[in-house]
Image (cartoon, rainbow, N blue to C red):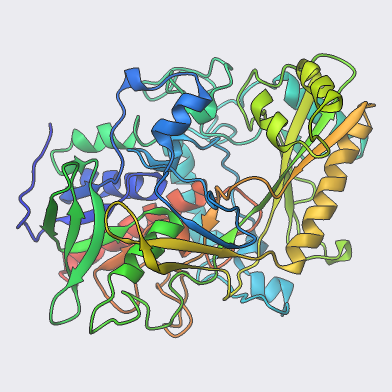
Length: 519
């Protein structure tokens, strides 16, 4: 049943954002009988709104409010996140590998690297493993809990054949949160290839389809879409006391609260904390360490495309149901720290036309596009290192339609990333060379960041981190961060599974604090 909470109800937990972090946390708390108000900036799409059309869904899903790029971030579109109920789980490719043990210990494993602000996580794989298992079961991740993997599509078969030919062995159709068989009231994947358009048949796990309806059935949850949070306010004791937001009609509303959990993706989470500065917290909320917005990380992502001797039809099949993990470990003999993944990825002719390198225009490009059904493609991505200077700040003058200073996304690639990227691209090319590809193209430094992490890192030391090991901010006991901003380092794996595991762990901690009356 749909629950409505009063704006003056200070017993509720307010969750900001409805994506992987916010959506899961909100549902988990509601299932435990904790009253939750979830504020989502975007609108709630109906089933009829979701179509198999990437261009149309881009406009319906994407966060298009202005963001300023600085450094090497892509001008005009530095990050790709979503503004809709379900958040970026509507657009994601559902790839769910776990972080590896050494990736929780970046400082201990990699040592001191000039320019990098490396630290170890305040928890390890053993501690997070039970929550990884819970997350995989909840999301229906293939290859776990006796859930069959998806079948290999043609793009995967090319990747596998080439990878084995060059000597790789850790190859499969990936752990993905896409139903290989009907599960949880949702259909099995039909391999139609529109994963990033929202998945109209709902085979892909997205919080719009799963967490939101489940939470609403509890009677302890209210979702308020089109509610753009503009500030978190605090009382005289410095505790968060209410959230101010603009509703769909542009009216300012003020919701009282017992605790607040921010899950706006790294850019919006940082902006909200910084924009909520006060006399008591002049540098922004939870920012006594001056770490809010800093240590911004994003996996480098590059495309490698081969023109194959036979037909591939990469547009058919789940996008990232194909992975090679042989390069994912740390091997300093390669000349860099951290690891790399190779993953299948289809691209539309429009994407190829815009970004292929070498591509340009004219007959050469036209011949490649004419050969579209023969193209095979992969993404290579790898670990990015935290740097104090890579950060999210707010503009001193430019404001958006809500009257808020727009975020500035500053990113400059660390030399370690530059070396890793060159290595990864060459290894990807080798896969297609081994199968006699007639041409090999790359798409480098052209994709906006979709894996955005690290701007409110967890740690034991309040002077060098924003949150404790459970995502509770050091400065404000009833203010939590519940998204990828928590990551002190990022490994080479897609972040969503780890985000879900972290917020399931956070839910245990938060429930205990609430029951004890500690917040």
